[in-house]
Length: 157
Length: 473
Image (cartoon, each protein chain N blue to C red):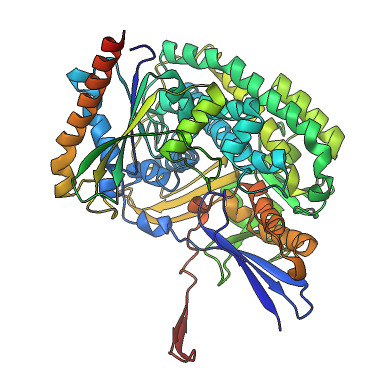
């Protein structure tokens, strides 16, 4: 793939399971299956990420979810937000940051969100047992997604 | 019957707050207050912690300006160790502090305030946001992304991460600067300066549109305070305190910041967790003063970098030596950002910037330390007392937003009286009340710290609305 792969684990590592993205990013940064990917850790999705998204071929966002049951892992494509309405103060939603990449830089790579349901958002610097047990699954989901996209890209050539 | 209007929460600022506006029987505004509704309590949290942990703990106060707390805290610790960091260690701290100024100022101007300035305070809120900004003025939005990224990358390259970096430690910094990092930063400076200058050109061309707002967005006589060097020029990292009144006279000049308690008092009100700092000489609540970019442009003689000094000259030609309106924080913030980008280049071009001597080591040599620096929003003080083992016994933080609290409340009242009419209450009126707060770019996560006991008023109310019991503390 041209443009490279960017993985962004985001959340608050001092709010227990909300730090899932950071823990996943730590593992992915040293995962031999992901050589060449840029792995970032962020507290929130900020406008500056639009530049990375515009330059990448594939972007994988990793975040905790309070709507999924604890430990459940999902992979969903992120579509560009269609309207400009946002109550944005300091961060953007995944569709909004993709929209911003299009508005500012004319393009965005393919963007996916890997989510894992959480058990706790309480203060603390570790993961709950359910989310800790699901962490390898989250890491594998990211690796498999990147491998799958790379295979599709090669097949399309 | 009198009516109260509540704006809750106030948006596009750092932290949680609300504004109440009191109307009389005729629907005229009689009072307005800016309430900070979040509580942090770091002065208590750190009691019992060893001094070497303080910079890292204090950086956790804020996700926007952690570097400012890191630096003020490390400087307080320097005093407790009774050490002076090596010159290169000081210069590297300066670079990190200026990068923090850049990224935070960029967030405030480009991301939080420019939608109001581009579309106007009457515009549809659905348009008045960063996506709308990107569609209407993509160059300005791209410059915002670029300038903020410039500051954040420097923090990440020096400190290891963008938010809550380590690296700054008591006695200096914990690693020297690699040549490749210096070169990488230097290569990004020209584009950052170009982007800031484009924003300045756009802002100056649109300034005439905002004469009405400038005349009511906190337009009043007050003092201003900031750090200056021994020659009276700007100094964001170190230096001496200067307080200038509305006529340009010095109320205090080049005073040792460790004597701050001789000049500054701290008051608490029962309706806010944000302390109100005031000039003791003028008393409470008359001792209003302002800090931050506007104050820095006012109290400094010169800035000391060529492009920023040209802009400062023009700023003074346009607005006078002591502009009275807080609306001009925006203009001052851009010049402050330009200075920071230029100054980073100067510091990194110094002959000793790659020196391996970046840290002084010592044990506990003093039981008290006060660290002072200029944070993006203004003068920041960290004051600690420790026992002979270096365990923190007491801490006091005086935060930029606290210095500005009296001025912010006065500004909210002024804007409310100018724009809010109960008979025809509209969203643009309320937006202006919020926007005057954004001029100060308050950081409420940083600023809500207790002075003595937490202000608390607890009422036990029965089902009929009767107050059954109440406690005030």
